[in-house]
Length: 409
Image (cartoon, rainbow, N blue to C red; front, side):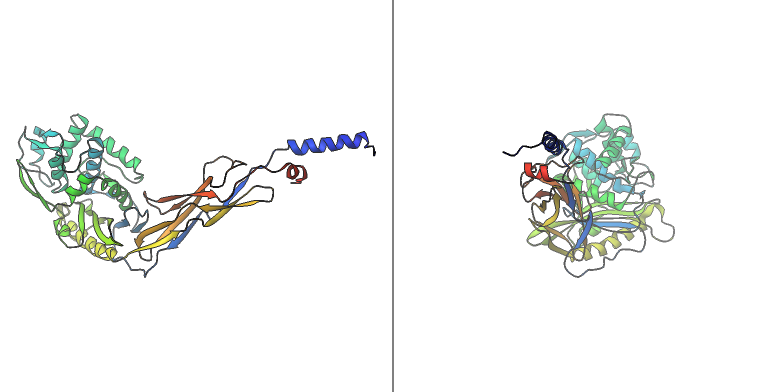
């Protein structure tokens, strides 16, 4: 039997103890470049944007925007009423065809109906009652400023619009409308400002309401107790381009503004295309923006016709595609893969942003099963951007005793 000197034995024991007690290094996740892009197939068709102002379009649900012009806050004019309707329907939801609660016209609404130089519903009488749905029609179709203010007071049970405006700004924040400020429920105040991209975020949200879609698509409507009202956007709704709203706006500070929605059947489904155009100013004196309203409608008509012909679909993510790896720091590199495929409907030649990120901020666990989610792939840049989990293709395990004893790093 070979005797092991005590000193050597103690050295071996100490080495083993040190190796086993040394902190294990955290695994390291490496993904593809944090941001990359792919291009949807088909020839790139130039969108006929105007030379001035700003605008944006998207295929609803694609999470991808096309834009032009500087993304700076400008007056919205009456497109502010889209947010008024959105806040109203969030707080007082209506089902399709449901009239909703009765709302009473007050003296202030009657007086404001006689105001000059603003859109309003004239001929109302104090004490007259209308359903919430008919009030929504009078708000959105002929753009009644006095109706917007009445709805603000009714919704918050207050004597002014302050509380409702606060709710409008809270809703804007919830939707990620970072460049938007509301100062009134009608848009008459030039302090109510937004951007085309922000207005698209709102359009995608509010078009989720069946009753809203039904109302803004009407070229006109009969209001019991008042008469027939006509849509300020009827020249586009009736243009044969599948346009179903949403809202016009015009005044001297804003010029002409328009948020629109149009359907186009593609791959057997009706696809909703949304767009916004702002800061369209007709030349010469244009009191209250009447000429600018025609200008923004004409410019938008060209854009709608163009993007309807640009629809295409493409597979932008394949399930099981390797997009990175986890290094366990002991010589193993475990592939990280996409967990599902994504076919995207968008505009031909459109660039789609792909952003890769890890899950959480803490260290990766040293043990995880195959399929454990460690990251996320974001496709698109809008509020409906698609998020695809990224997972381990194989399990992540603790290093063996032998590996721990023999590691040098």
